[in-house]
Amino acid sequence: MPKTRPALSRVEFIALMAMLFATIAFSIDSMLPALPEIAQELSPDDINRAQLILTSFVLGMGIGTFFTGPLSDTFGRKPIILGGAALYIVGAILAYFAQGLELVLFARFLGGLGAAGPRVVGLAIVRDVYAGREMARIMSFVMMVFTLVPAVAPLMGSVIIAMAGWRGIFLAFILFALCAAGWLAMRQPESLPRENRRPLRWSIMWAAVKEMFAHPTVRLSILAQTLCFSLLFMSITLIQPIFDVTFDESVNFPYWFAGMALVAGSASLLNAALVMRLGMRKLATTALAAQVVLSSLMTLAWVSGLPQGIMFFVFLFWMTSVFFQTGLTLGNLNAITMEPMGHIAGMAASVSGAVATVFGAALAIPVGLSFTDTPLPLSIGIGLSSLAAFLVMLHMRRVEQLTG
Image (cartoon, rainbow, N blue to C red; front, side, top):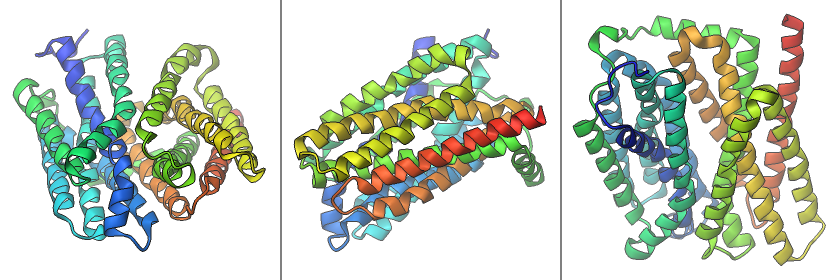
C-alpha cells in the first residue's frame, strides 16, 4: 500500500521517475560519439584526454551522491532535485561555450554534481510514496524503462552531432533537464512532509560513516562495488575509441552499442530469477569469476594475432559480457551493503554510492589514458579489477563464516 496517497497515476509516476533516473545514462552515453570531434578540436596533441569528459562527470556525480540524500531529508525532495537540475544546466551552458578542454572538464564536473540529485533523490521519492512489494514493483517498471536509455543514447548523440555539431549535445542536456525539472515541479507534489524531515547534522553523518566502515561485510562489499564500478567506467571510457581507432567502426558504433546494451539489460531479469535460489553473494562471485576467465581469453585472443574481422566480433561478445556482468554484480553488492544498515539506510546508500563511484572512476582514469590503438589496456584492466573483486568476495565469505 502507498505510504502517502500518490497524486499522479501509476503510469505517469513511473515515466517521471524513469526520466529522472535516465539523466545519468543520457549524460554519459550520448557523449560517446562526440569524443573524436572534441578530441580533434580541443585536445589534438593528446586525444586520449577527451575521455576525461566522461570521468569528470562521474567524479562530480559521485561526490554529489554523498550530499544529496541527507540534504533532501532536511529540505525536502523537490528543492534538491530542482537545485541539482539548475546546476546541471549551468554546467551544460559552460560546456557549450567552452573554448578549451579544461573548462569543458570543469563544466562536466558541475553537471555531475547536479545530476546526483535525480539519481539519489528520485529513489527517495519512490520510497516516500510506495512501500514493500508495491515499491519493488514500481522500481521494476522504472528500471525497465531506464535500461532502454543506454541503448538509444549514442544513436541520439550521433543524430544531434550530425544536425548541430558536438556542442549541440549540451543543448540537448539543457532541454532534457528543463523538461524533467518542469514536469517534476508542475505535477509531482513534495513527497516528504515537513514534520518528517530531519535536521542536517554532520556529526550524525560522520558517525554513520564510521559505523559503516567498522562493519567487515559492509566494508568489503563497498570495496567490491568500487572495483566493479572501475571496470564499468573503463569500458564506457574506452569502448568508443576502440571502435574508432582499433576497428574503424565509428560510423556503426551507435548501432552495435544499442545491441550490446539491450542484451546486457537482460541481466537484471536473470538476476531476479536466480537471486532467491542462489543468493546475492554466490551470484556476484560467480559473475566475477566468469569475467576473470573471459577477460583473460580476450587478452590472449588479441595477443595471438587473430584476423581483425574475427577479433571485432570477439571484442563485441566480450564487451557485452562485461556489461552483462555488471548487471549481475552491482545490484547484489549494493543489497549486501544495505543488509546490516537498515537503521541508517539513506545515509548508507549515499556513502556507499559516493565512495564506490568516486574511487571507481579514479581507478579507470589511468587505464583510459594508457590507450594507444589496441584493446589490451582495457582487457588487462578489467581482468585485474574482476580478479581483485573476486578475491574480495572470497575473503568476505571467510570473514562471515568466522564471525558466524
